[in-house]
Length: 310
Ligand code: RIB
Ligand code: CA
Image (cartoon, rainbow, N blue to C red; front, side, top):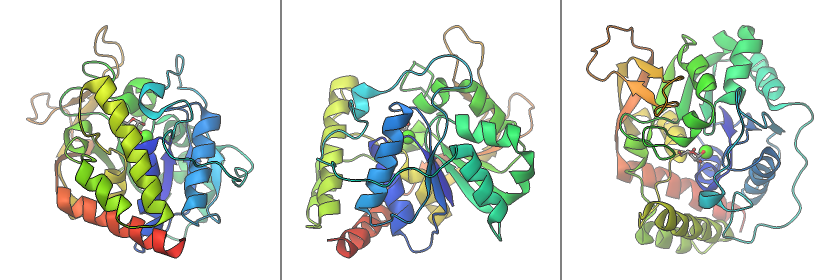
């Protein structure tokens, strides 16, 4: 798989799951501006991979802004570094030469079999890849993205952050004709980093487990301050879990459109669950989550990595 991300506390857990589960082979990571500016999301991706002992995985920086309009970061949720909480200072590798989209293209064209493309931030890089390099389409087995919602949003009343940040990019992906799975807030809000979850990370008694506990502790404080939620939802690792074990999520194959012009609803994912529009289905939309199975996948991967990198 290839992961495109904007670390980000939940992106960090997703990267650890992608590296730590032996059923996956992480070919490379591209970064995008979103939770924080591109320089910070790129540094954070490198720091997490270094912490996981996965320094051989190429990381390349992608887009520093959405296709249209300006970037608004989520410093209120992820802090000024994008990974506030633990002390993660220390040397990190340099990002690979060349832009993120070129890394994605090169990895896809070199792969002997089709690749899962997991998008955990604004879909800018993925949209540019599909627009500028149509030759990669047959090399993509499926695009699984964390974004949107069948219900309300988290950034505007009906807009989820990744989609609201770049609605045009999400529209390109959903119109691509490729197999697409949407992991929206309606299921990610079932995966809450409760105090018991944080204790499970800390009880691993490894540096990685402690870092995860500290990341989630910061994330919890940010969600409480911003949304009045006691326990933060870990959005992104669910997209990776859905690739490892598709039975972790329950999906329906329905039409999904992105609102591009609504005065109050720009960036909303309009999910036609009851087929009222007559439009053809274009995405597998997650409507249920096996919560315990998800957490067990993530904890097993983090424990495995932590013990290997004590
Ligand atoms: O709305 C949640 C999504 O936006 C997550 O991917 C989070 O990391 C941010 O990118
Ligand atoms: Ca993200």
